[in-house]
Length: 247
Image (tube, rainbow, N blue to C red):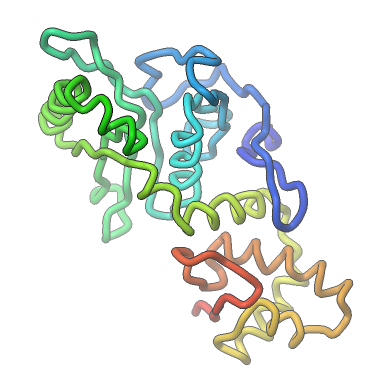
């Protein structure tokens, strides 16, 4: 079962690939309101997710949807997400199914403060070309969301494809690694003395052996992914990025 829960497979320390696993057959909080057939657009596929019900997978129908789902999966502020959640009647048109309903954790970090947002994911070019056709759907979705205490939002490629996406794709595979407790303790001890440094400097502070550094960097990125080590995740991570000790 653990293998089915890995949305991404790590190829090496800087690249990854999506798992082709089709882990279907488990209930979600909300069943999809519309089935997506493979090949409807340029890119379709499945992403297993730890934030869906155990073993469930989400089907995406564009690379932009896949990228947004990666951000949701990596975010500590997302409690869960439901792809293709509802079918909404549109006056004078076909029913409309928004892409995903996201359950955000509020500032108090409790279940009582969660907020649900219904998202449509679109390229800006597609919005410009088809705005008159899409507008009635968006109005219907906004009304549907408001009636249920949700919000409706558009997410476009310029807001999705940022440095935060690069970091999410880079770090997500490390969350599936089994932790090396000894290496993590060594790194945390050195980082506690330095307080603020860079990955390259931290590894040099731990050892001058490049082979050991190569092993330690895996544990370091795992701790950054798990927020045990602090970093600015809105800027592209490199070996020279600033990292810091998290109390």
